[in-house]
Image (cartoon, rainbow, N blue to C red; front, side):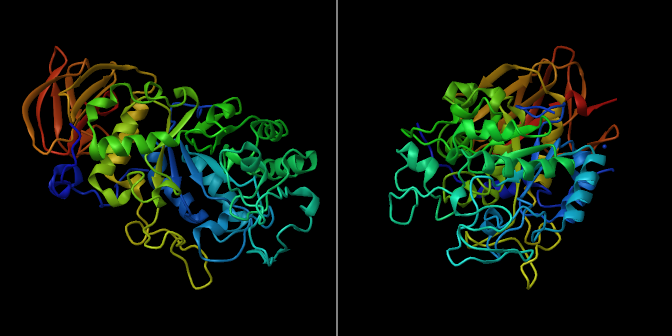
Length: 482
């Protein structure tokens, strides 16, 4: 039975206690799958460079995030919409988010905090402005002319649809040679273009960048990306944006030889389960659902594009259910997870909070900036992910509907009750060593103490607890009290 359940109770449960309160914390090369033991990525979308640097020091490093993904840093067209950052004018590291010096300082600061930096790299196209103009840092340009970078011969002109735009996603040629909403499509099969793009990426690598999110990868043949990658000065983490479309000829699997690939089906499937199906169905979530292999899959509940597709995924607007879905993502060992951190908006084109000249303001969380990565449930589950890295799933249990539980073998345990009623007095088998553990859904573990409830696991690996409706309990060996 599929059910649509009331969510009004979400704001009343313990799960959301302090949800919007700031997190209080104390001040600590691969081609696929982020390297190291800390693999969770925080996507600080549209944050300026001083704010990213501060967040690495005060939150991301201490909470255990391994990477920060930052927005495109190159010079772009002028305007206040979010998408101007995805319309390059030149490859100068000068944008509304800051200067080259500020970018360099941000990378150094994040590294000092133990956080690596991934850049959102726009390499498929240039601007979509027919009239041309002057970019953010003063560079002049026309739609198909970018002095010092590209001339008209460096672009595709597919000549199929009058305005060169993609009209048929069932046609591979159009998808990879026509224009994405009028954006001047680079001829990435050209060695000159490949070399120019690699020069830009190598410049970022020289500033210490640790990886790239390749924007609009679906609109470039995988072989073109491989050729650009072959020109890089060193090995680096790469994740490619390839949106799966049923029946379409360009498939995400074509790109796995280059690195990780975004699994867009993940967020949509997870939203459908949490909104209208059964959590019990999640027992084989991931590859068992036809998703990409786990070791090359980059997953997220939402990102900047999908959160603007009304009803398609869960977003910050869903509050408690969004927190639960992120908790599941961080507990479940499929793919490499990215946590979205966005800003509030009512107009889907709206850019981030900015001054009168459209320069991005410093981030002030919960005041225009949503900062989902700081929500206590999400931030504390990053530690769960780190503590359980490499452990498989065991002790799966479900009631056939909305109450599930599972262990990350020997390292962690979570139970999620998304029923409309509390489950009281039930015992759960964890397989964990006996001891007292901080429930990181409701409390923060810090220096041997827990700010929330403590769960006692007995000598046989069991504990008993009450779980309110639309709530959860999570414990792990990294938050075990002495």
